[in-house]
Amino acid sequence: MSQYYALLSIVFMMSFVMVFDKAHLEKCNARFWKTRLMSREEVDRLLKVLSACQDG
Image (tube, rainbow, N blue to C red):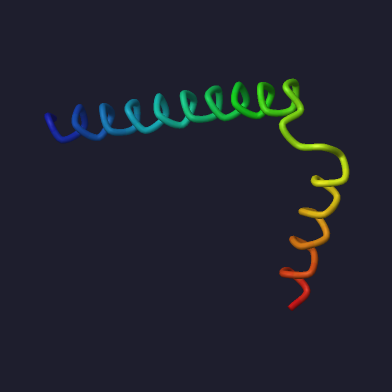
C-alpha cells in the first residue's frame, strides 16, 4: 500500500512543478513584452533567423 502513496506523492509533486513553471513562464513573458526590451524590428529579425534554422 505504501508504494501507492509514494506514486501519488510523486505525481502530486510533478503536477505542482508543472503548474508553477507555467505560471512563472507566463509572468516572465508578460513582463518581457510589456517593458518592450526588444523592438519590433529585432523581433522580426529573430523570427527570420528561427525560420531559416528550421528550414535547414
